Every structure is written in C-alpha cells, then in structure tokens.
Image (cartoon, rainbow, N blue to C red; front, side):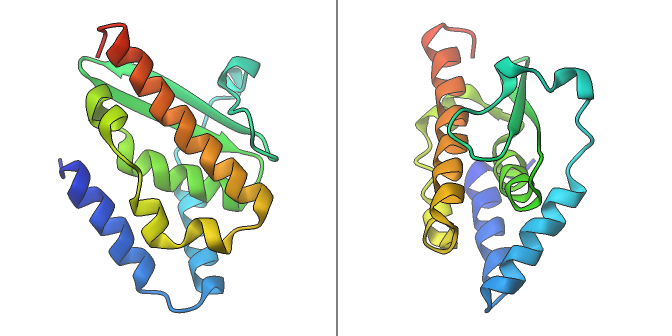
Length: 142
C-alpha cells in the first residue's frame, strides 16, 4: 500500500494532467462513476454528511487499526469529490487521518473552482473524515 503522502501526491499529479477545469470536472465525474456500489440499506440519516447541499453518505468500518470508508452521493460531481477523498484516506490509521492537514486539496485548487455550496460540502466532507478519525484516536480505538 502506498504511504499517505504518496497517495496524495498521486492525486495531485493526476489532477495536474488537466489544464482546463472542464477536464478536471470530467475526471471527478469519472471517479464518481468508479466508486464502489453503496448499499441502499446504508443510506441512513446517521451516515449523511451534514453541511452538503447534495446528499452524501459516508460509512466507516474499523478494520484492525485501519479505517475503511465507503460513500455515495446523489450528485455526480460531489460523488467524485468524496471518491477522491476516500481513495486517499481509506485504509489509513485513525492517527494518520487525524494528524493530516488535508492541504493536498488546496493544491488541487478545488475550493477555488467549485461553487460556494460545493466548496462548503467539500469542507464538510473533510471535517467528517477528520472528526471520525479524531474520535477514534481520542477513544483509544484507533
């Protein structure tokens, strides 16, 4: 498995291959299409990420000392964004995620090139991943 830093660098490199934001949006859409199917029975209120205009569900499974994430969204670009995030952070320890600054997202230029509501949703997704990991670290179940 790649290190967290390697995974983040890979995403930055992939994103930088595209000069136009339209192409970057297409890349996000493709990521969303490749996301593993999310079971309907997991689309519950407690798995909804608060603060997103569209509906985004995140399921977290603690597997030994690693967190495995599954997600879905009813909006395709948002689905691509959550796919990008869980692609980087799924399989990491709670400590790795809790200690990360998520700054690679800024290097992608996502916040500046998303609509304000999608940028708020991105911030909510990041905060949910971080908070989930921090809670596990704090509770000693990492």
